[in-house]
Amino acid sequence: NAGVTQTPKFRILKIGQSMTLQCTQDMNHNYMYWYRQDPGMGLKLIYYSVGAGITDKGEVPNGYNVSRSTTEDFPLRLELAAPSQTSVYFCASSIVQGSTEAFFGQGTRLTVV
Amino acid sequence: DQQVKQNSPSLSVQEGRISILNCDYTNSMFDYFLWYKKYPAEGPTFLISISSIKDKNEDGRFTVFLNKSAKHLSLHIVPSQPGDSAVYFCAASADPGYALNFGKGTSLLVTP
Image (tube, rainbow over all chains, first blue to last red; front, side, top):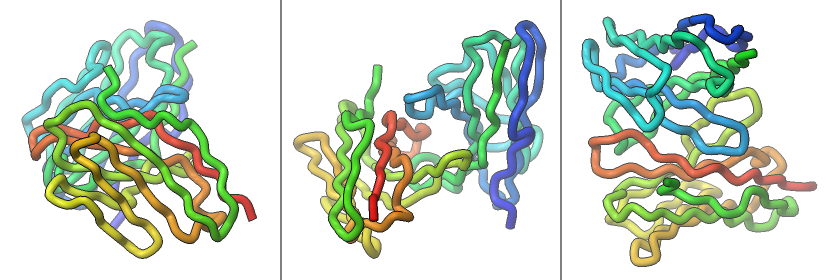
């Protein structure tokens, strides 16, 4: 099992550009999450999904969009990138939301210049 | 507003000694508490958890203690090893109904 796979690992964007961060998991987990981690800070929840076709906002959703067309994939879309979106992005999945551990991908380091 | 707080950004411990990492929370609805370990350039990995019905959970060298009345939990690592050097995140959630809330992390350095 590969677990949670994120691509790309690194990306530099110019202000105003758009991109999609890819996340896929092969554990058949229903729940998936996107977090961002700013330097010296904890992880903040951007969006989450409790199953295919269902998504909801987390703590810091502005500037992002998500979709969940399959159980495996949960892409995060950045429209009109801004320097404030420079961060490390982590995708995670879990069997049961909150009560058991979430499995994380290796992260995508995004710089907006 | 930070609901999970780790007030020590860093901790240095000698190999073989005990490491104690602390975490405080403000939301009395939290029922599940987890510790994650993170190495540079990797995602966090789950270490140990505890639910609010317990006050202690042990897994090998790692023990988590929960004091609900004080809204405080701690992670004990005994004995500490150089490979334990990493950033440790405390996380909490309410009953299955929301995702994890994370603290800012404590960077642990175990020196030989």
